[in-house]
Every structure is written in structure tokens, then in C-alpha cells.
Length: 260
Image 1 (cartoon, rainbow, N blue to C red):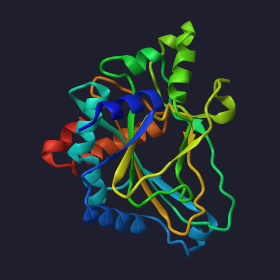
Image 2 (cartoon, rainbow, N blue to C red):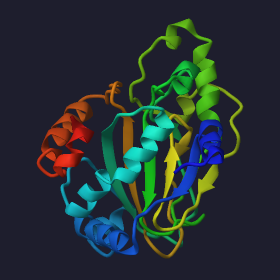
Image 3 (tube, rainbow, N blue to C red):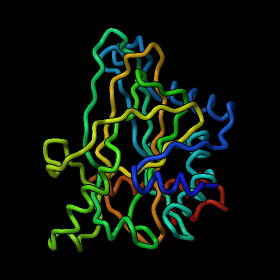
Image 4 (cartoon, rainbow, N blue to C red):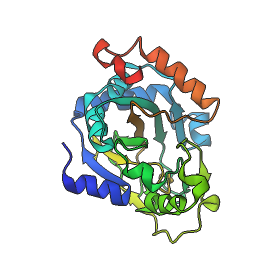
């Protein structure tokens, strides 16, 4: 399912884009669901801001089918070196084009690890999939990231005894508060509709503006090993648990273990 080269690229760069079995019909249903969930581009809200997002508060069947798709569980299990996977969270976003604006982006990390976490078996980390429901080019709000920055920060933390034994937990760190390390220049992630970028949000990364002529559709799915609990800050953590409980009524019986 994953080649040795793809695994090596994920470990060293922190991100790798792969093909998925999602069909053109599934992608079309997902985009249509987004169009129903988000305001239109010509509405007052759509004109006011370009990027619209929601997190873990929807039960539309095409999105439920994406969460429970066995492909993502199988890939996550392989990459995280574990037999049992749990679904962690989902975020969806639609970014409308602003072709007359200047291209811009922001950078941050969502979580930080030590080298011991990244190299453990099972890995003590969250694996994220950015699933691209439409083509993403260098102008269409690509996700920007700094290759290898997750390991730079992990090595920096590993040298600090006060950080080395901390359990990983999700907390955002903006660019100005990141460790002062020699990061490489940001790189845009480009992909075709139906591909997914596997990455760790311990990378220095961030969204960019859409200066293309078509909207960007993206879904952020995250998973972790079943024996690992990585909390979110409150109230997001409680909201995620509520969503997991509600998902049990929507997942197929054979997939309920994802939120057990």
C-alpha cells in the first residue's frame, strides 16, 4: 500500500502525497455536500471572507463514508506501526478564489514531539490526511510547509529534559513563538483531486490564500494508535468526545471501533 520511498519521505520531510481509491463519483458527492454546508461565494458571508471551515459537527453521509473508509485506517496503521487505529478528528474547508489579491500564507505547528515519540513503535503521534477533493495548484490555496521542520523541533525538544518526557498534546504555536531554528523555505503542496497528503501537523505549516479562479475543497482527517490518547484544548476536547459518541449511530457496525 505504501512504498518504502513514501514512508522514508514521510519520516524525513513530514509529508508525502499519495493516491487514494476515491472515485470521481465520491469526490463529486463530497464537493456537493460542501456546497450545501458552506455559504455561496456570492452571498454576503461568502464575499466577506474567502476561507470557510467547520470541525466535527456534521453527519452528512458522504463525509461519514470518508471517515470510515478502510483505506485511511489501513494506511494509518502501517505508518504508525500499530494494529489498531482510532479516528481522532475531522475538519473541512472550502476556500473561494480571490484572483486579484496578493498571495499570502501563515505558518504554525498544531503539536510538537520529541524524537522518541516520532521513532517509537507504535509512533506516539497523530497522523493527518489532507484529502484533496479538487485539484490544488500553486495558486489555489495550497498548504504551505517547511520540509523536515517536525524533526528539527523534535531534536530541539529532545535535548531539553523538561520537554523530553511530556505527553504529546495538541496546542497551536504561531510562527513567532516557534523554536529559533534554521528552517528551510516554505514549499506548496500541490495535488490532483482524489489524492491525499499524509503529514504530521508538527511540521511548520499553514494555509494560504486562493489567487486562482476556482475554489479549493479540502478535508483534514486525523488518526492515532488506539493505545494513545492525545487531548485537544478545552472546549474542543469535550466537543470531539461528543462527536465521537454521536458518530456511533452513523458508522457501519464494522467501523464503530474507530471511535471506541
